[in-house]
Image (cartoon, rainbow, N blue to C red; front, side):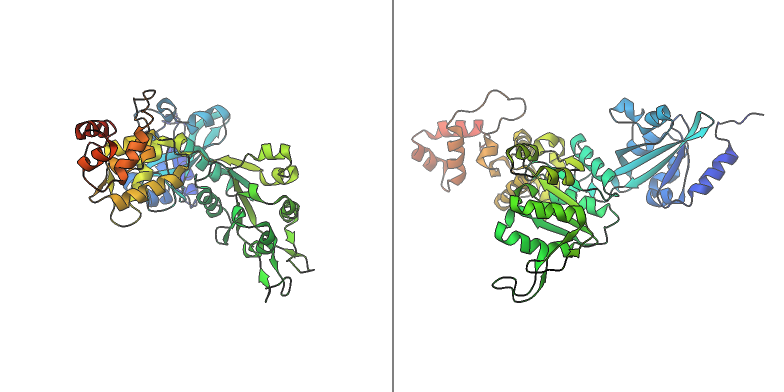
Length: 434
């Protein structure tokens, strides 16, 4: 009598018994996406879902979809693994008892001869980022954000140098910390070196330390940031600002792990993982000679693009909720104000968004942030659906005068030399009717 299923009951039991030794959550699925079994780690981590998972489709349990991931606009690791007859890996957002979470999914086919008869899926929840509003850390779920996070998950367990590239304010230090926390050095120190904040005269002594008497004011020996990072991660923020004279010493440090304190003769060593970041175009700097080519190729073994906020506008509501909820009484944001936030290009990225919302928090008298509590630059931005209409050149000046004015509307109209009715009509058109 033939087996009722390509993976017969006895073989399934043996496979699940073997997978019980896994510390990560694991499920077994057939080739039709049906979940056949789950180990204890899965039941422990996904408790509320585990009991109802057996016999259901994986995309129903993990995503709430009624069809496979690839038919819902996502990468389906099962489809790829079946084509390759080998493993595939993807970062997905899964439903969990704690809400949506980023989960690193690794899928391996179970082969009988050349036929795929089942799949083993290992799930690892990403702790360094949240797929919902959070009081701390990285927050986002847009495709551009997930792509950057997936790259971090890939490289973190290795010891490769990482180069984070993106505009100012995109969260480079948070991403660097995520690399550190996903590595085998997570228990060691995470040391930040702000290369843009160190004058050339202090760069070497801060980085490498100095011996007593090395220079005027060196009253005692001081270890440098490189020594402090031993066993952990050294994060060189804005590495494009490192003085050219220091770049050769930095290259020697990265290549050999060796250095000398200022005023010292003894060669020292420090074992650290390097993560660097910059908003500058390093390849252009190679051409004009302001950044060493050999140093560039040492630090850029694994480059990661960090998306600007305008590249991940879908994350704005979640980011706004996170920032407004991080201190004091949480505030909500009115729909008209959110429309203006979405319309703005955010040249300062998340740092600028945080500043705007902290200012709005101080101006808010109630439980919500209103349109008129946003800066004039945002109020002058075209709202969705009005692109191309623009604003009169003096609208921005009017917005600023209105926001700064402490008196009545009649007083403001008199100062501006217009009727109160005209002022009201113009303010209403700008979203400041109240």
